[in-house]
Image (cartoon, rainbow, N blue to C red):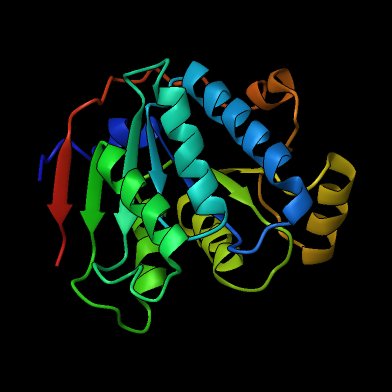
Length: 215
């Protein structure tokens, strides 16, 4: 593995996605549109690598929107953090087809384990968080892997968060109830509102193709 791949400078230009597997069926188009705007805003602020954990639901939407964005910005990099080689073994065939298409088009693939084991998803989530400075999430409740990933990102890395699941008033109430004393970025469907809170960072282009196995 390139020792510069996760240098301090590269972390400044790396974002990652995390979100719920089950999304509101009537909101898929809106979530996808907001994802694209958010990726574009992050790109404008210097982000070039976008980490995705390859799960169903929000992860799949995020990967596909990153690929769409890359069609017009070839220096944007889709990096996949694959928890294990057998991740899709129990998936429906239609989901496997989408997953394999994403694998084929990704710029980087990091396979964290040859087989599934209890805790491999947690390992995947922390792998991404430890190598990023921005988290783009879809977080509606404080249960499950998405919530634990956001908590970890904030408490251990001080990562900036963009939550696409709530409007500003809902998010304010949510944070007050959860008593999370951290800095957040409010979500918005409008590109300008998303762009403004992001830190301006000078990014280096990362367009190399690579696959790494980490175990």
